[in-house]
Structure formats: C-alpha cells, structure tokens
Image (cartoon, rainbow, N blue to C red; front, top):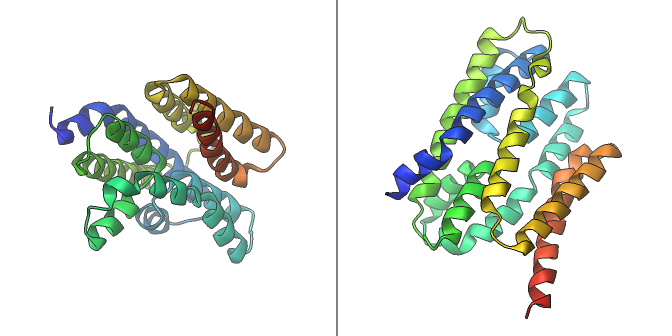
Length: 224
C-alpha cells in the first residue's frame, strides 16, 4: 500500500470525527456571537481545534483580547515539542515545504505521522495527505455547524464534545508498543486530568505534554 493510500485507509475514522467536532465548533462559535465568515476564518487561519474552542469560550465571557492571545499561545506551545520530535524527518523538505508542514501540524496529524515514521518510513507523503484531508474535513464541519446550527441550544447534550477525546484514546491505544509507552500515556493523562480538576484546563495539555517526554527519557536512561 502506498503512503497516500495508507493515510486515507488509516485516517478515515479521524476524518469523520473531524467533521463531527468541526460542526460542534461551528455551533459553539455561532452561539458565542461569531458570524459564519468569522467562524470559518478561525478554522482556516488557526486550524487548532482545542485552541479554537478555548478562544471562543473566552470570547463568550468577554475576556480581554491580550489574555485570549496569551491563552491560545500557551495552549499551542505543545506544537514546539511535536515539531522537535519530527524534525529529523521533515528537515529534508524545502523551507517553503516545512512552512506548509508546520501549518498542517495538529495533534492528530502528529500522532498518525509519528506512528508512520516509527514503522521505518521516511517519506512525507503520508503526513501531507493525512494533514491536508484533516484540514478539509475540519473546515467543512466548521462551515456546516456555523451555517445550520445557530438554532441548536446545547450541542454537548448529544455527546459530540467527547468525540475528539475518543479519537485520542484510540490513537494512543494503537500507538502503544512497549511498557514505556503505557507509562508515558498514563503520566500525561493523570497530569492533565489533575490540572483540569483544579481549574487549570488552559495549561493542562502544555504541562502534560512537557512532562511526558521527561518520563520517556527517564525510562530510557534506566534501561541503558
């Protein structure tokens, strides 16, 4: 199977989920007062689901713009860790190509691509195809939600807010190959859950994402 076909065959469940969660975001954005164009522009420009939901929630509570920008930057800081992890592979691309790959970098794209690279592949077509299709489905979902969902009162009652969580659980389950992978995943999950319980949701992902590699490094050192 070619890398392009593998990206589609392995990624289609995530693409479906991207549409569902994109619709949820479009609904949320409209209920926060954004127009259809503004909601769609957010997905086109930012293209970071978690950050977009946080941004819309802060807009709804009339949070000052500098604080919104800071929260989004902190939440997306984890992309620096993801970019570092895949740098050995993407370094072969041209500067313009690396900018395009950076734009497509999301949690889902990173998780699927790093799994592909860990299988010994070094081509970037899998990453590119998966990231591009994810972008298309996410933006399509956002447009659908923004255009037709303004009258829906509570989209969370249907459980679609849990769809993205289910996707990440599935990705982690597929990617676990060693005991160290289990330890890293559990550490990240427990830290993120604890921070969310104490009201620090905005930094939960960043802190968990920073601690997990340290756990992986410590385990690796112990086995040397």
